[in-house]
Image (cartoon, rainbow, N blue to C red; front, side, top):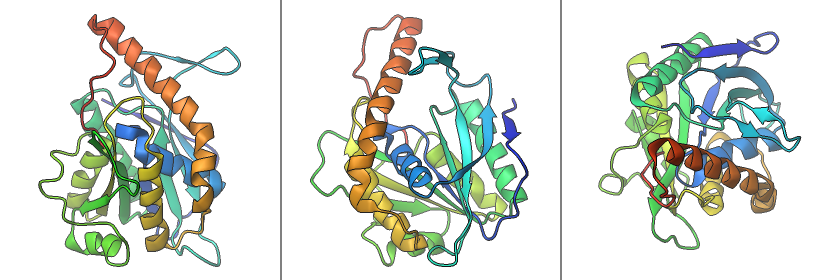
Length: 263
């Protein structure tokens, strides 16, 4: 099972790169953060990723033309001030469709990270709840105590996550586990959000953004995140609706309110 990575242009040389992953999941929390960072930092697209292990559907864009689901990697080189690491961003419309394809996808991403000398990964997602307070909590776990301490020591993220969530499903969980044997430190940042497939967890995304910004010293305009994300929200809700409807047609189900925990 192979995922196809299409390099766009020449591969740069990276300086201590950190991968920040944010694919769709509960509340689309991780995707909101990564898409905002890509836009705010004016990151450059590096790879287009494709496979026949994505959902068997296409989207209709604003030009009334069809588009295949996409997964992409972007990058932003470190500046003279602020973050000292080059940043890589993993985003997309979808996640791999099943367990086997998810393992294959994560392992190929990690193969690439080894090639690029990446030694740190941040995976992000949501913890689905029935209701959330004004300030959603952010929980942190990882594959070493050192990396967890790095993201909780000077932030409001809590490492008291045992018993709060069950298994962390999808890429956001699996990539953290699979990074360990490769000596790549990886952390998962999970924000409380509403457990409904049509909900976009802007507040949870904002709280994760604060943790990432403070830990990596990334200079972004967090004050405007809710305003900027409104333009993403409509698109995300429509994408989720279309994928749900496609799945229901295949399964013969008319249910649109079933949810499960996916990072």
